Length: 360
Image (cartoon, rainbow, N blue to C red; front, side, top):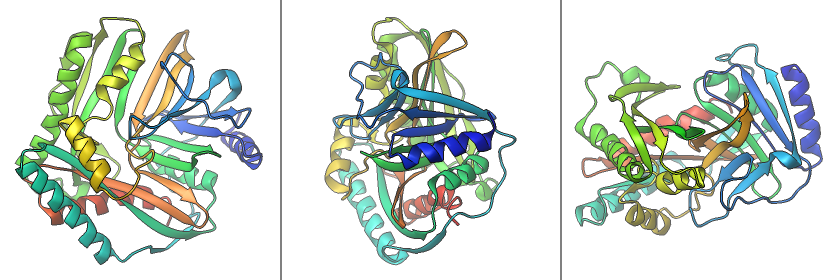
């Protein structure tokens, strides 16, 4: 099946109001689409199910998944990635001016710094939602542009009558699992590619990422063996740079392995903060909007690949939600005692460009 034939089937399926997802893994020249054959809301309980997962940021909220036994799975080769296509829509204007949004976000960061100073937590990840007016926006065409722009990210288009339409290009793996062997990453700290030669990473950026690494190690040690943590290095994701450690090992217990890993890792300090309980409570009480599926996780779960069940889940970052003539973008950054509100605002602006590039 060609790419054009695949997306034609996706468009026809969407006209019937049925759930679907299209996705492509980092560095792979293939796109997969899973087309659900009914409008049901399927929810994972013990994560032994097989399908495509779409889970919210708040662990207490219900997840969604498209089960393989109630869907058709299609695949097509992609001629190439890294190609920009013609624009699909036009960004008209934000719901509020940049100055108003900047003022609100900097105030939120100041509140986070105050809580850190009081010892409530050591790090908290604070985000904002940006509403953009758009016209003539076709989700499938927009996704094809996103697919071309970010070859080294996990790109997806999720459409469901009960969640609305979401898409994203995320650089961050939650974990991958083949049998008992797993891999994950600690990804945090952000700077623009053009700033790469402006000196070493700052103490603030190093500390922010170290919280994530230490948390993942502490969470995984009780349930794994042969735990390995690579040296820290700089990782490029689109127009941004991050600090990254590769982490891997094998699970001690094969009972509900996915459930154990999700409980241990989600949400990590990369999207929530540290300690997890206190930072999660601060976010839910102070951000002033519902993250929904932003900073949740998404991807394949228990899908057969070359004779073995494989799970590849990603943190849902650099994403947007599409509504009629409007797009909601979600961006955030990690706050520590060394954070400066102005810098944190600038980081969210840089991150927002990842998805905005597919709209303009």
